[in-house]
Image 1: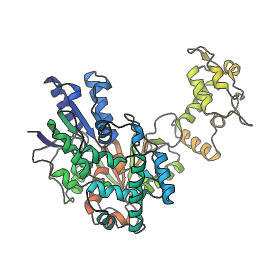
Image 2 (image 1 turned 135 degrees about the horizontal axis):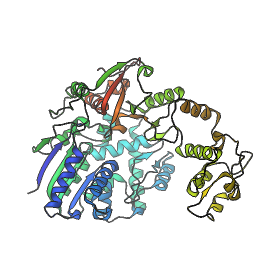
Image 3 (image 1 turned 180 degrees about the vertical axis):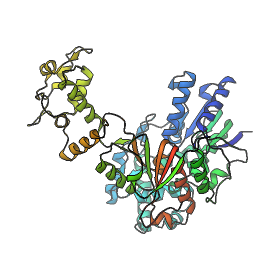
Image 4 (image 1 turned 30 degrees about the horizontal axis):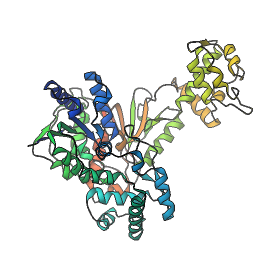
Amino acid sequence: MTNERLILGPPGCGKTYTLIERIRKAFDDGVRPEEIAFVSFTRKAIQEAVERVLDEFGMNIKQLAYFRTLHSIAFRALGLNRSSIMDNDDWSALGRNLGMSFSGMDKTDPDEGILLSSVGGSGSKYVQVLDRSRYRGVSLEQEYNEAEDYDLYFSKLEQIKKATITYKSLQSKMDFVDLIERAMHAQFPHFKLLIVDEAQDLTPLQLDMVKHMAQSSDEVIYAGDDDQAIHRWTGVDVKKFITLTDNIEVLSQSYRLPKKVHALSQQIANRIQGRIPKEFHPREEEGKVEYHLTLDTVPIHKGSWTIMCRTNSFVKEFADQLREAGYLYAVKGNPSIDPKLGEAMLTWRILQGGGRIGVLQAQKLYEVVPKQGDHAVVRRGAKKLLEAAAPDAMMTYEDLTKFGLIAPLDRDAMDIARLGSDDKLYVQSIERRGESITEDPRIKVSTFHAMKGGEDDNCVVFLASTKACVESRYPDDEHRAFYVGVTRARKELHLLDTDKRYRYEI
Protein backbone atom coordinates (compact mmCIF):
# COMPACT_ATOMS: atom_id res chain seq x y z
CA MET A 1 0.00 0.00 0.00
CA THR A 2 1.22 3.49 -0.88
CA ASN A 3 2.34 5.61 2.08
CA GLU A 4 0.83 9.08 1.57
CA ARG A 5 1.24 12.24 3.63
CA LEU A 6 0.55 15.93 3.28
CA ILE A 7 3.17 18.46 4.37
CA LEU A 8 1.69 21.90 4.99
CA GLY A 9 4.29 24.63 4.67
CA PRO A 10 3.16 28.04 5.97
CA PRO A 11 5.15 31.02 4.60
CA GLY A 12 8.89 30.75 5.16
CA CYS A 13 8.70 27.50 7.11
CA GLY A 14 11.30 25.68 5.05
CA LYS A 15 9.06 23.51 2.87
CA THR A 16 11.66 23.10 0.14
CA TYR A 17 14.36 22.34 2.73
CA THR A 18 12.11 19.65 4.26
CA LEU A 19 11.54 18.05 0.85
CA ILE A 20 15.25 18.10 0.03
CA GLU A 21 16.00 16.43 3.37
CA ARG A 22 13.48 13.71 2.55
CA ILE A 23 15.30 13.16 -0.76
CA ARG A 24 18.58 13.00 1.17
CA LYS A 25 17.13 10.23 3.37
CA ALA A 26 15.99 8.34 0.26
CA PHE A 27 19.52 8.49 -1.15
CA ASP A 28 20.92 7.33 2.19
CA ASP A 29 18.51 4.37 2.02
CA GLY A 30 19.89 3.37 -1.37
CA VAL A 31 17.15 4.85 -3.59
CA ARG A 32 18.48 5.77 -7.04
CA PRO A 33 17.78 9.26 -8.49
CA GLU A 34 15.70 7.81 -11.34
CA GLU A 35 13.42 6.20 -8.73
CA ILE A 36 12.41 9.64 -7.42
CA ALA A 37 9.84 11.89 -9.09
CA PHE A 38 9.47 15.54 -8.15
CA VAL A 39 6.53 17.15 -9.92
CA SER A 40 4.71 20.46 -9.78
CA PHE A 41 2.51 22.61 -11.98
CA THR A 42 5.06 25.42 -12.22
CA ARG A 43 8.50 25.37 -13.77
CA LYS A 44 9.68 27.70 -10.96
CA ALA A 45 9.12 25.06 -8.26
CA ILE A 46 10.84 22.37 -10.33
CA GLN A 47 13.84 24.58 -11.11
CA GLU A 48 14.34 25.41 -7.43
CA ALA A 49 14.26 21.72 -6.50
CA VAL A 50 16.66 20.76 -9.31
CA GLU A 51 19.15 23.47 -8.34
CA ARG A 52 19.04 22.44 -4.68
CA VAL A 53 19.53 18.73 -5.45
CA LEU A 54 22.37 19.40 -7.88
CA ASP A 55 24.06 21.66 -5.35
CA GLU A 56 23.50 19.40 -2.33
CA PHE A 57 24.37 16.05 -3.86
CA GLY A 58 26.72 16.85 -6.72
CA MET A 59 24.61 15.18 -9.40
CA ASN A 60 24.13 16.02 -13.04
CA ILE A 61 20.83 17.05 -14.56
CA LYS A 62 20.44 13.83 -16.56
CA GLN A 63 20.12 11.86 -13.32
CA LEU A 64 16.99 13.83 -12.36
CA ALA A 65 14.89 12.47 -15.21
CA TYR A 66 11.60 12.82 -13.35
CA PHE A 67 12.05 16.24 -11.81
CA ARG A 68 9.54 17.82 -14.18
CA THR A 69 6.33 19.78 -14.53
CA LEU A 70 3.16 17.73 -14.81
CA HIS A 71 2.84 18.55 -18.49
CA SER A 72 6.45 17.60 -19.15
CA ILE A 73 6.20 14.28 -17.34
CA ALA A 74 2.91 13.52 -19.14
CA PHE A 75 4.58 14.41 -22.45
CA ARG A 76 7.39 11.96 -21.72
CA ALA A 77 5.10 9.18 -20.43
CA LEU A 78 3.00 9.36 -23.59
CA GLY A 79 6.06 9.17 -25.84
CA LEU A 80 5.13 12.32 -27.77
CA ASN A 81 7.18 14.70 -29.87
CA ARG A 82 6.91 18.47 -30.24
CA SER A 83 4.84 18.24 -33.40
CA SER A 84 2.08 16.53 -31.39
CA ILE A 85 1.34 19.70 -29.37
CA MET A 86 -0.67 22.72 -30.47
CA ASP A 87 1.77 25.53 -31.24
CA ASN A 88 1.51 29.15 -32.35
CA ASP A 89 0.77 28.24 -35.96
CA ASP A 90 -1.98 25.84 -34.92
CA TRP A 91 -3.73 28.36 -32.70
CA SER A 92 -3.45 31.03 -35.37
CA ALA A 93 -4.95 28.71 -37.98
CA LEU A 94 -7.79 27.75 -35.64
CA GLY A 95 -8.45 31.41 -34.95
CA ARG A 96 -8.64 32.22 -38.65
CA ASN A 97 -11.17 29.42 -39.14
CA LEU A 98 -13.32 30.98 -36.41
CA GLY A 99 -12.77 34.61 -37.31
CA MET A 100 -11.06 35.19 -33.96
CA SER A 101 -7.55 35.88 -32.72
CA PHE A 102 -5.80 32.95 -31.06
CA SER A 103 -2.13 32.71 -30.29
CA GLY A 104 0.06 30.36 -28.30
CA MET A 105 2.38 31.99 -25.80
CA ASP A 106 6.03 32.15 -26.83
CA LYS A 107 7.37 30.80 -23.55
CA THR A 108 8.40 27.16 -23.82
CA ASP A 109 9.32 24.34 -21.49
CA PRO A 110 13.12 23.97 -21.66
CA ASP A 111 12.81 20.20 -21.17
CA GLU A 112 10.49 19.47 -24.06
CA GLY A 113 10.29 22.66 -26.10
CA ILE A 114 6.49 22.71 -25.93
CA LEU A 115 4.33 25.72 -25.16
CA LEU A 116 4.05 26.38 -21.44
CA SER A 117 1.17 28.77 -21.16
CA SER A 118 -2.43 29.05 -22.14
CA VAL A 119 -3.70 30.72 -25.27
CA GLY A 120 -3.59 34.45 -25.83
CA GLY A 121 -5.44 36.73 -28.23
CA SER A 122 -9.04 37.94 -28.35
CA GLY A 123 -10.44 34.43 -28.02
CA SER A 124 -8.36 33.53 -24.97
CA LYS A 125 -11.22 34.04 -22.50
CA TYR A 126 -13.29 31.47 -24.33
CA VAL A 127 -10.44 28.96 -24.31
CA GLN A 128 -9.93 29.55 -20.58
CA VAL A 129 -13.56 28.65 -19.86
CA LEU A 130 -13.31 25.55 -22.06
CA ASP A 131 -10.10 24.44 -20.33
CA ARG A 132 -11.45 25.21 -16.88
CA SER A 133 -14.53 23.03 -17.38
CA ARG A 134 -12.28 20.12 -18.36
CA TYR A 135 -9.81 20.70 -15.52
CA ARG A 136 -12.69 20.79 -13.02
CA GLY A 137 -14.63 17.92 -14.57
CA VAL A 138 -17.85 19.93 -14.90
CA SER A 139 -20.13 20.60 -17.86
CA LEU A 140 -19.44 23.54 -20.13
CA GLU A 141 -22.81 25.01 -19.21
CA GLN A 142 -22.02 24.88 -15.50
CA GLU A 143 -18.61 26.48 -16.00
CA TYR A 144 -20.13 29.20 -18.19
CA ASN A 145 -22.79 30.02 -15.59
CA GLU A 146 -20.27 30.14 -12.76
CA ALA A 147 -17.86 32.30 -14.73
CA GLU A 148 -20.42 35.13 -14.78
CA ASP A 149 -18.58 36.83 -17.63
CA TYR A 150 -21.23 38.66 -19.58
CA ASP A 151 -18.84 39.39 -22.45
CA LEU A 152 -18.91 35.70 -23.36
CA TYR A 153 -21.65 33.95 -25.35
CA PHE A 154 -22.51 30.32 -24.70
CA SER A 155 -23.25 29.64 -28.37
CA LYS A 156 -19.75 30.91 -29.23
CA LEU A 157 -18.26 28.64 -26.57
CA GLU A 158 -19.95 25.63 -28.10
CA GLN A 159 -18.76 26.68 -31.57
CA ILE A 160 -15.15 27.04 -30.41
CA LYS A 161 -15.28 23.73 -28.56
CA LYS A 162 -16.51 21.90 -31.65
CA ALA A 163 -14.01 23.62 -33.96
CA THR A 164 -11.11 22.90 -31.59
CA ILE A 165 -11.98 19.21 -31.33
CA THR A 166 -12.28 18.96 -35.12
CA TYR A 167 -9.00 20.77 -35.74
CA LYS A 168 -7.05 18.65 -33.26
CA SER A 169 -8.52 15.48 -34.74
CA LEU A 170 -7.68 16.41 -38.33
CA GLN A 171 -4.18 17.61 -37.46
CA SER A 172 -3.46 14.87 -34.88
CA LYS A 173 -2.69 17.51 -32.27
CA MET A 174 -3.14 17.85 -28.51
CA ASP A 175 -3.50 20.78 -26.17
CA PHE A 176 -2.32 20.93 -22.57
CA VAL A 177 -5.53 19.55 -21.10
CA ASP A 178 -5.35 16.61 -23.51
CA LEU A 179 -1.89 15.85 -22.15
CA ILE A 180 -3.20 15.48 -18.60
CA GLU A 181 -6.31 13.55 -19.66
CA ARG A 182 -4.32 11.03 -21.68
CA ALA A 183 -1.71 10.69 -18.96
CA MET A 184 -4.46 9.12 -16.84
CA HIS A 185 -4.05 6.01 -18.98
CA ALA A 186 -0.25 6.12 -19.32
CA GLN A 187 2.16 3.66 -17.76
CA PHE A 188 4.47 5.42 -15.30
CA PRO A 189 7.65 3.95 -13.85
CA HIS A 190 7.67 2.53 -10.34
CA PHE A 191 8.78 5.35 -8.04
CA LYS A 192 10.20 4.75 -4.58
CA LEU A 193 9.41 8.38 -3.77
CA LEU A 194 6.94 10.75 -5.46
CA ILE A 195 6.93 14.39 -4.30
CA VAL A 196 4.16 16.72 -5.48
CA ASP A 197 5.14 20.30 -4.70
CA GLU A 198 2.73 23.27 -4.58
CA ALA A 199 -0.08 20.74 -4.67
CA GLN A 200 -2.64 23.34 -3.60
CA ASP A 201 -2.36 24.83 -7.11
CA LEU A 202 -3.40 21.65 -8.93
CA THR A 203 -6.81 21.32 -10.57
CA PRO A 204 -8.99 18.25 -9.88
CA LEU A 205 -7.87 16.72 -13.19
CA GLN A 206 -4.20 17.31 -12.39
CA LEU A 207 -4.67 15.80 -8.94
CA ASP A 208 -6.25 12.76 -10.61
CA MET A 209 -3.14 12.40 -12.76
CA VAL A 210 -0.97 12.60 -9.66
CA LYS A 211 -3.13 9.98 -7.95
CA HIS A 212 -2.64 7.77 -11.01
CA MET A 213 1.14 8.19 -10.66
CA ALA A 214 0.85 7.44 -6.95
CA GLN A 215 -0.56 3.98 -7.68
CA SER A 216 2.89 2.87 -8.81
CA SER A 217 4.79 4.68 -6.02
CA ASP A 218 5.90 3.45 -2.61
CA GLU A 219 5.79 6.81 -0.85
CA VAL A 220 3.95 9.98 -1.86
CA ILE A 221 4.45 13.40 -0.31
CA TYR A 222 2.05 16.19 -1.18
CA ALA A 223 3.41 19.60 -0.18
CA GLY A 224 1.78 23.01 -0.19
CA ASP A 225 -0.33 25.42 1.82
CA ASP A 226 -4.08 25.75 1.44
CA ASP A 227 -3.91 29.34 2.75
CA GLN A 228 -1.86 30.21 -0.36
CA ALA A 229 -4.21 28.61 -2.89
CA ILE A 230 -4.77 31.65 -5.11
CA HIS A 231 -5.40 30.08 -8.51
CA ARG A 232 -9.08 29.13 -8.31
CA TRP A 233 -9.66 30.97 -11.61
CA THR A 234 -7.60 28.27 -13.38
CA GLY A 235 -9.92 25.54 -12.12
CA VAL A 236 -8.23 24.79 -8.79
CA ASP A 237 -10.49 23.44 -6.03
CA VAL A 238 -8.70 23.79 -2.70
CA LYS A 239 -11.15 21.36 -1.06
CA LYS A 240 -9.57 18.60 -3.16
CA PHE A 241 -6.17 19.52 -1.72
CA ILE A 242 -7.15 19.58 1.94
CA THR A 243 -8.86 16.20 1.66
CA LEU A 244 -5.98 14.39 -0.07
CA THR A 245 -5.08 12.43 3.07
CA ASP A 246 -5.61 12.44 6.82
CA ASN A 247 -1.87 12.02 7.39
CA ILE A 248 -0.93 15.70 7.78
CA GLU A 249 2.28 17.32 9.02
CA VAL A 250 2.40 21.09 9.64
CA LEU A 251 5.80 22.79 9.54
CA SER A 252 5.73 24.94 12.65
CA GLN A 253 8.59 27.46 12.47
CA SER A 254 8.76 30.35 10.01
CA TYR A 255 12.26 31.51 9.19
CA ARG A 256 10.90 34.53 7.31
CA LEU A 257 8.15 36.28 9.25
CA PRO A 258 8.93 38.55 12.22
CA LYS A 259 6.40 38.75 15.05
CA LYS A 260 4.37 41.77 13.92
CA VAL A 261 4.04 40.57 10.32
CA HIS A 262 3.11 37.09 11.54
CA ALA A 263 0.40 38.47 13.85
CA LEU A 264 -1.20 40.44 11.04
CA SER A 265 -1.01 37.49 8.66
CA GLN A 266 -2.87 35.30 11.14
CA GLN A 267 -5.67 37.84 11.40
CA ILE A 268 -6.15 37.48 7.66
CA ALA A 269 -5.76 33.68 7.63
CA ASN A 270 -8.44 33.28 10.30
CA ARG A 271 -10.96 34.95 7.95
CA ILE A 272 -10.60 32.05 5.50
CA GLN A 273 -13.51 29.67 5.92
CA GLY A 274 -12.36 26.64 3.96
CA ARG A 275 -8.93 25.95 5.48
CA ILE A 276 -6.98 23.55 7.63
CA PRO A 277 -6.35 25.25 11.02
CA LYS A 278 -2.63 25.46 11.63
CA GLU A 279 -0.23 27.10 14.03
CA PHE A 280 3.31 28.16 13.28
CA HIS A 281 5.78 30.37 15.10
CA PRO A 282 7.43 33.58 13.87
CA ARG A 283 11.06 34.61 14.16
CA GLU A 284 12.21 36.28 17.39
CA GLU A 285 12.58 39.66 15.70
CA GLU A 286 9.69 42.08 16.20
CA GLY A 287 9.73 43.45 12.65
CA LYS A 288 7.63 46.40 11.60
CA VAL A 289 4.11 46.96 10.27
CA GLU A 290 3.20 50.50 9.23
CA TYR A 291 0.29 52.16 7.44
CA HIS A 292 0.64 54.89 4.81
CA LEU A 293 -1.67 57.06 2.75
CA THR A 294 0.81 57.63 -0.09
CA LEU A 295 3.92 55.92 -1.41
CA ASP A 296 5.86 59.14 -0.72
CA THR A 297 6.02 58.36 3.01
CA VAL A 298 7.36 54.83 2.51
CA PRO A 299 11.20 54.80 2.89
CA ILE A 300 11.92 53.14 -0.45
CA HIS A 301 14.98 55.34 -1.05
CA LYS A 302 17.23 52.64 0.39
CA GLY A 303 17.18 48.88 0.84
CA SER A 304 15.45 46.09 -1.05
CA TRP A 305 11.70 46.52 -1.70
CA THR A 306 8.81 44.76 -3.36
CA ILE A 307 5.56 46.63 -3.99
CA MET A 308 2.63 44.24 -4.42
CA CYS A 309 -0.84 44.80 -5.84
CA ARG A 310 -4.01 42.85 -6.48
CA THR A 311 -4.11 43.44 -10.24
CA ASN A 312 -1.84 44.27 -13.16
CA SER A 313 -3.53 47.65 -13.62
CA PHE A 314 -2.36 48.69 -10.14
CA VAL A 315 1.13 47.44 -10.99
CA LYS A 316 1.21 49.85 -13.93
CA GLU A 317 0.12 52.72 -11.68
CA PHE A 318 3.03 52.14 -9.33
CA ALA A 319 5.47 51.65 -12.18
CA ASP A 320 4.45 55.06 -13.52
CA GLN A 321 4.88 56.62 -10.07
CA LEU A 322 8.35 55.15 -9.64
CA ARG A 323 9.45 56.29 -13.08
CA GLU A 324 8.19 59.81 -12.43
CA ALA A 325 10.12 59.85 -9.14
CA GLY A 326 13.29 58.65 -10.84
CA TYR A 327 13.59 55.20 -9.29
CA LEU A 328 15.02 52.22 -11.12
CA TYR A 329 12.61 49.31 -10.75
CA ALA A 330 11.56 45.98 -12.20
CA VAL A 331 8.08 44.73 -13.05
CA LYS A 332 7.81 40.97 -12.75
CA GLY A 333 11.55 40.66 -13.28
CA ASN A 334 11.80 43.11 -16.20
CA PRO A 335 13.95 46.19 -15.40
CA SER A 336 12.57 49.61 -16.27
CA ILE A 337 15.71 50.25 -18.34
CA ASP A 338 17.08 47.46 -20.52
CA PRO A 339 20.31 46.28 -18.81
CA LYS A 340 21.97 45.97 -22.22
CA LEU A 341 21.56 49.72 -22.72
CA GLY A 342 22.97 50.38 -19.27
CA GLU A 343 25.98 48.20 -20.02
CA ALA A 344 26.49 50.02 -23.31
CA MET A 345 26.53 53.36 -21.47
CA LEU A 346 28.97 52.07 -18.87
CA THR A 347 31.26 50.63 -21.55
CA TRP A 348 31.28 53.92 -23.45
CA ARG A 349 32.11 55.89 -20.32
CA ILE A 350 35.04 53.55 -19.66
CA LEU A 351 36.33 54.32 -23.15
CA GLN A 352 35.77 58.03 -22.60
CA GLY A 353 37.87 57.84 -19.44
CA GLY A 354 40.75 56.31 -21.33
CA GLY A 355 40.08 52.79 -20.06
CA ARG A 356 40.23 49.47 -21.84
CA ILE A 357 37.44 46.98 -22.51
CA GLY A 358 37.49 43.31 -23.45
CA VAL A 359 36.40 41.89 -26.78
CA LEU A 360 33.22 40.49 -25.23
CA GLN A 361 32.31 43.94 -23.86
CA ALA A 362 32.92 45.43 -27.28
CA GLN A 363 30.70 42.82 -28.92
CA LYS A 364 27.88 43.59 -26.49
CA LEU A 365 28.31 47.30 -27.21
CA TYR A 366 28.15 46.69 -30.95
CA GLU A 367 24.94 44.66 -30.54
CA VAL A 368 22.86 47.55 -29.21
CA VAL A 369 24.25 50.72 -30.83
CA PRO A 370 23.01 52.19 -34.14
CA LYS A 371 24.79 50.88 -37.22
CA GLN A 372 23.44 53.19 -39.91
CA GLY A 373 22.11 56.71 -40.32
CA ASP A 374 23.31 60.00 -38.83
CA HIS A 375 23.59 58.50 -35.35
CA ALA A 376 25.59 55.42 -36.35
CA VAL A 377 28.15 54.37 -33.73
CA VAL A 378 29.78 51.51 -35.63
CA ARG A 379 29.95 50.51 -39.26
CA ARG A 380 27.60 47.79 -40.44
CA GLY A 381 29.29 44.44 -40.13
CA ALA A 382 31.66 45.79 -37.48
CA LYS A 383 30.80 43.02 -35.04
CA LYS A 384 32.31 40.51 -37.46
CA LEU A 385 35.52 42.51 -37.53
CA LEU A 386 35.89 41.85 -33.80
CA GLU A 387 36.07 38.14 -34.51
CA ALA A 388 39.56 38.76 -35.90
CA ALA A 389 40.74 40.20 -32.57
CA ALA A 390 42.44 38.05 -29.96
CA PRO A 391 39.75 36.79 -27.54
CA ASP A 392 41.65 38.08 -24.51
CA ALA A 393 42.58 41.43 -26.04
CA MET A 394 41.92 44.62 -24.06
CA MET A 395 41.11 47.60 -26.27
CA THR A 396 41.08 51.38 -26.01
CA TYR A 397 38.88 53.70 -28.05
CA GLU A 398 41.72 54.12 -30.54
CA ASP A 399 42.05 50.34 -30.89
CA LEU A 400 38.34 49.95 -31.58
CA THR A 401 38.39 52.52 -34.39
CA LYS A 402 40.27 49.83 -36.33
CA PHE A 403 37.34 47.48 -35.69
CA GLY A 404 34.48 49.55 -37.01
CA LEU A 405 33.93 52.12 -34.22
CA ILE A 406 33.16 55.49 -35.84
CA ALA A 407 31.38 57.61 -33.17
CA PRO A 408 33.44 60.54 -31.80
CA LEU A 409 34.65 60.06 -28.24
CA ASP A 410 32.83 63.15 -26.95
CA ARG A 411 29.45 61.73 -27.86
CA ASP A 412 27.15 61.37 -24.86
CA ALA A 413 26.74 57.86 -23.49
CA MET A 414 22.96 58.13 -23.58
CA ASP A 415 23.08 58.89 -27.30
CA ILE A 416 25.35 55.90 -27.78
CA ALA A 417 22.69 53.72 -26.12
CA ARG A 418 19.96 55.17 -28.36
CA LEU A 419 17.89 56.57 -25.49
CA GLY A 420 14.93 58.74 -26.41
CA SER A 421 14.38 62.13 -24.76
CA ASP A 422 12.04 60.74 -22.08
CA ASP A 423 14.41 57.89 -21.24
CA LYS A 424 17.33 60.34 -21.04
CA LEU A 425 15.53 62.38 -18.40
CA TYR A 426 14.61 59.18 -16.57
CA VAL A 427 18.19 57.87 -16.55
CA GLN A 428 19.46 61.25 -15.35
CA SER A 429 16.99 61.08 -12.45
CA ILE A 430 18.16 57.56 -11.57
CA GLU A 431 21.80 58.58 -11.61
CA ARG A 432 21.09 61.70 -9.51
CA ARG A 433 19.86 59.28 -6.87
CA GLY A 434 23.30 57.68 -6.93
CA GLU A 435 22.08 54.44 -8.48
CA SER A 436 23.42 52.56 -11.47
CA ILE A 437 21.21 51.31 -14.28
CA THR A 438 23.56 48.36 -14.75
CA GLU A 439 22.65 46.93 -11.33
CA ASP A 440 19.68 44.73 -10.56
CA PRO A 441 16.82 47.02 -9.49
CA ARG A 442 16.40 47.03 -5.72
CA ILE A 443 12.71 47.95 -6.12
CA LYS A 444 10.33 45.42 -7.64
CA VAL A 445 6.63 45.79 -8.50
CA SER A 446 4.49 42.69 -8.73
CA THR A 447 1.06 41.19 -8.32
CA PHE A 448 0.46 38.89 -5.36
CA HIS A 449 0.19 35.97 -7.77
CA ALA A 450 3.54 36.62 -9.41
CA MET A 451 5.23 37.08 -6.04
CA LYS A 452 3.96 33.81 -4.52
CA GLY A 453 6.95 31.76 -3.40
CA GLY A 454 9.13 34.87 -3.18
CA GLU A 455 10.21 37.14 -0.34
CA ASP A 456 11.94 40.46 0.31
CA ASP A 457 13.35 42.40 3.26
CA ASN A 458 10.78 45.16 2.87
CA CYS A 459 7.35 44.88 1.29
CA VAL A 460 4.58 47.29 0.40
CA VAL A 461 1.07 45.88 0.07
CA PHE A 462 -1.42 48.08 -1.77
CA LEU A 463 -4.83 47.57 -0.20
CA ALA A 464 -6.84 48.46 -3.30
CA SER A 465 -8.92 45.78 -4.95
CA THR A 466 -11.59 45.59 -7.63
CA LYS A 467 -15.37 45.41 -7.64
CA ALA A 468 -15.25 41.87 -9.05
CA CYS A 469 -12.85 40.70 -6.32
CA VAL A 470 -14.61 42.37 -3.41
CA GLU A 471 -18.10 41.28 -4.48
CA SER A 472 -17.07 37.77 -5.56
CA ARG A 473 -19.07 34.79 -4.38
CA TYR A 474 -15.68 33.40 -3.23
CA PRO A 475 -14.50 35.75 -0.44
CA ASP A 476 -11.76 33.30 0.53
CA ASP A 477 -9.99 34.14 -2.73
CA GLU A 478 -9.50 37.71 -1.55
CA HIS A 479 -8.30 36.67 1.91
CA ARG A 480 -5.81 34.24 0.43
CA ALA A 481 -4.48 36.80 -2.07
CA PHE A 482 -3.74 39.39 0.61
CA TYR A 483 -2.41 36.69 2.92
CA VAL A 484 0.16 35.82 0.26
CA GLY A 485 1.01 39.51 -0.08
CA VAL A 486 1.68 40.30 3.57
CA THR A 487 3.65 37.10 4.16
CA ARG A 488 6.42 38.02 1.72
CA ALA A 489 8.10 40.42 4.20
CA ARG A 490 11.25 39.40 6.10
CA LYS A 491 11.66 42.66 8.06
CA GLU A 492 9.21 45.46 7.30
CA LEU A 493 5.66 45.45 5.98
CA HIS A 494 4.12 48.72 4.81
CA LEU A 495 0.39 48.80 4.11
CA LEU A 496 -0.58 51.44 1.63
CA ASP A 497 -4.14 52.64 2.08
CA THR A 498 -6.03 53.94 -0.85
CA ASP A 499 -8.73 56.28 -1.97
CA LYS A 500 -9.89 53.61 -4.39
CA ARG A 501 -13.54 52.69 -4.09
CA TYR A 502 -12.80 49.04 -3.49
CA ARG A 503 -10.24 48.07 -0.87
CA TYR A 504 -9.31 45.18 1.36
CA GLU A 505 -9.96 45.91 5.02
CA ILE A 506 -7.05 45.23 7.37
